[in-house]
Length: 89
Image (cartoon, rainbow, N blue to C red; front, side, top):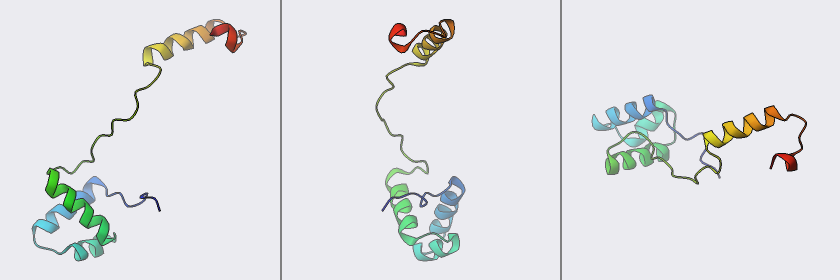
């Protein structure tokens, strides 16, 4: 099962932290926000470990074509509209 739909908005994250620090239980916070207590619990655990509200950046694979390469390719295609792909390459 995917994790789509369980993401908390930044505003919800602030509410979770404020209500948690005021002593409200995780289950009660989940009921207030109409979110699963597991989502609230996972977020609070991550917040206590890292001290940040934002999600971590994901590295991912670098792009094959840079923005500069893309612009050059676009100019080539526009200049020679009738050329085939093999002619352009």
